[in-house]
Length: 207
Image (cartoon, rainbow, N blue to C red):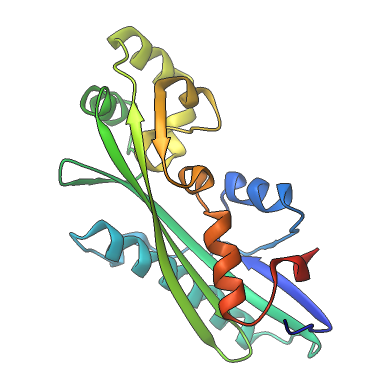
């Protein structure tokens, strides 16, 4: 593996969950939210949608870094991510309000959803880009109306793609998952490791 003088992962997201995931495995990312307007990209295919959104977010931040003076000895990789839940042909991002969140859970309970997370990694100096999607099956518990309302009242699901946080109270209402666990939180660590290897680096270069 190539050993640069310095290597920094730039997270093009303000997501606390993604930041915590990276920190848990010894990576201290620089946070640089893209502020990209997600409404600019539409696609009926959830896999294509999250890949396009992740790439757009990463590209915005990469361009910002290119336009700004940077230390020449610092190798930077920009990571953009985006997640949606697909269920019965519908694509769900973050709920707009509590009423929508309640309606979502009335549909989701007892069902199996596909949690898709797009990952885009750009090497700023090139800029070479790699884009992939990770998909995890989520089996939702058949919870009661009362449990749904109580969960929405915690405010937790209002800022989550798919209207639940498996690492929080929402974990109580997921019977099981099939696939990558961290993908459901917002970032697939195994996929990130593979993508970094595709650039010729090693995940341990960030330690």
